[in-house]
Image 1 (cartoon, one colour):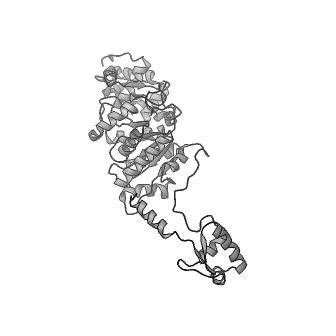
Image 2 (tube, one colour):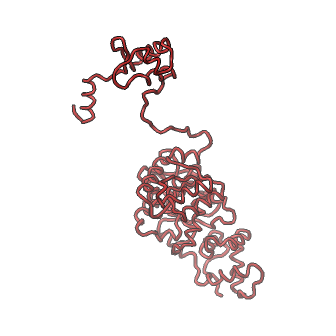
Image 3 (spheres, rainbow, N blue to C red):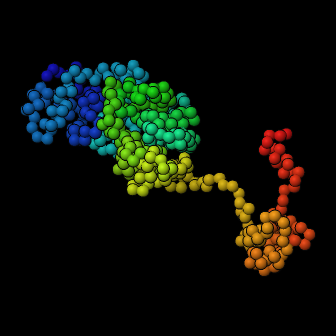
Length: 406
């Protein structure tokens, strides 16, 4: 076998070369490279190529048989030149900008990240949506064949997370991924798309403009070099990166069997919180979310505030109740509420009649009526009492205002 045309003792070139040689998800060989180090492992593989694979023995022989053929025509400098031509750069563990969260993957950590744009830990961008190394992130993922409901929810979650200063991570696919990325970009936030192929292969092609926008204002990243095509195995492998890069994962829509559930499984394996958005029980697009909540303990989330509770420190997010229509009996003590409830909706009633209906004594009724009168909720009607009414003129003005009348 010929010598490789680049310096295999260069740690950066060796790490980049392994991202070409090794398929994502090859845990056995990844463990071998992780333990030896990128340079020493590459030296070993080249030496095996020179001696012949048949000369290798032991557990490493199988790995060598898969990898040695890939040494043929390998010149990782070509992929680095393509990356540089795209305005991208290589980030290795230990570099400024390397996401420390990926270290939680242990021996499944990628050897390098091929990046277009800027990662949160790198030099901040001038754009308002730039992120720092300590910026919290949430993965928003879901079905490609998303419903209008799912896409709307994903976009609204992204906008709410952006307003709270949280970055959004997803996979750049159609459906939920695209809605989450767009919601982030339109609200001036920072988003990362993790690709299954090289950063030169903008896949799916229909999202090319969106992915270019992400590269300009956020980051596109891949663990495989330019030129690598996306494949099913690479899609599944990259899901671990989505889960690891984010502090929490939220599944907006997912079928009973879905790649988004795979991402949620990786997140749970990393002890990251998992949230799921409920949907109609008749919708197959939400069956996977309901399965996550029922079988795997995912937290039911319905808005950005509830998602923030997953990723922010305990007590950092104050729970908010949704707006509700005020009730007639709001803010009343129990006695006053019973008296007001006992008054007829139309017409009036005398104290003894009110007392019987409310189950109170006449004295208690008179006391409550006095407080209600001061609050403008009841009024006298001769010797009887009735609920306060809006004057006819005021009702007319209200209707005129609702109709847009001056």
